[in-house]
Image 1 (cartoon, rainbow, N blue to C red):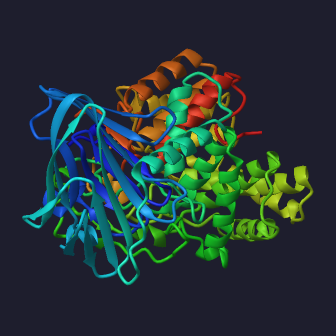
Image 2 (cartoon, one colour):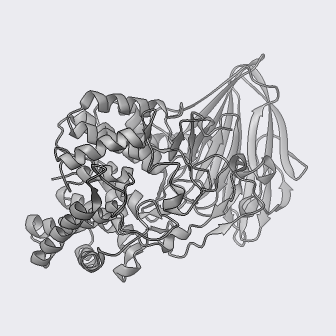
Image 3 (cartoon, rainbow, N blue to C red):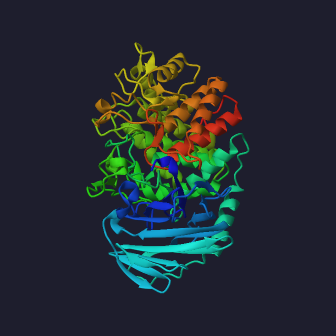
Length: 596
């Protein structure tokens, strides 16, 4: 199925991807980055799924979220009646559970259920034992318990059932994970859990301070971002999926079920803008734990609890989403050097200070070490924001973000009285600025380019005015924005860099979709330039690309007119929230990173 046909439910420890046909095709238990027990999204139903659907093809089916919640409802209409499938994962729960409730709305509907548990991401058929009202499924370290109030039976290595739901009736299904060496937990009451979960989400949404235009889109994005937060530690995953391709049939298939420092800092800023300071404090504490130690060993991504070793493995037995191979778990980018993340960390901590949000006592000591590392290493080549798998280069965006790290360190001393070698930091800041202006700008192209000495454009340069490196009134910035619109923009969507020549830069075969966050950055730049109507039109076009549930993936393929890449993608939703905020402010003076 197309990604547009899927929704997400979650409990802020993991998430399930649910199709509008009633099938859960992806679920990792008990964490986002655990092995999957349903992996049909990257293969076939035999690789694990849980489907509840009408016995006969429905006349109509619609999927929607309950207002201001992550409770997903799929309504089916057949010749005999209407019934609703309610899917959710209880929040603030010591257990890891998926609950499904089928309720009759009008007449009656006959349903069938097919539960195929495949542990170890679609590879292992568990040992199943039946008990009155359900089953237990065990394989290695994992055990699942399934219970329902409808009779089930085993068939073709699946648990199946047929049942009828009449108007006013409810049938319930609960699936829970636990370590196989421990006793199974007592399962939640489905109806009470539904009430608690609905109350949780609506109470959380009520704290949102955003009151501008497009509030519905902003709230849905914030709920999505909250759902991608790993509550036990405060870490934030980039997406709940792995290996959804950036190009259908291609090899750009990566595991995003980890905490990228960059994505997390952007998410943090979106939360703070909307009034969610608790998430900001939790993230800053996660950051201190994860990156503690030698700044030279700072990674760009970590496991949800701060794990550093994330070896990349290819799963040859899975055919991939629409035959897009390879399927990968783990991410080798964890070993890359990306200079920009130091700037993003320093900027996030700067915003925390500006907003008066308290951080850990040793936070500034860690930041000083990070700044000193940048001061000594900013002139080094790196893999850059796009995690290239080719040779390191002097990426212009990386240098701009190194400047940002030094700038925020200087401001920490000047504006907040913190201790530091501000004279030397100012000198380094100026040296980086001079370097970018001298070597990052191509006079012939009339644009800042992808890396020093290059004639190629890169949409990451759109961040330059948004972080305050140069204003949009600077001719070099304005001409760069115009060049990006002219050369790497198609049908109102911006590519990271030219898709036909991308392989020569990143070491991979060329071709991918337009990168949605980059297009939102263009919205922000146009708004800063006073081209507000153009910015609003571009933003509205981006909103039209959302699924009917309000979700976005990482990229969009204009050729096929569909979302591509991991889904839903935190980076895209962060950019949506920030652009909506900027357009609502309509002041033309504040960028998405709180420029001074």
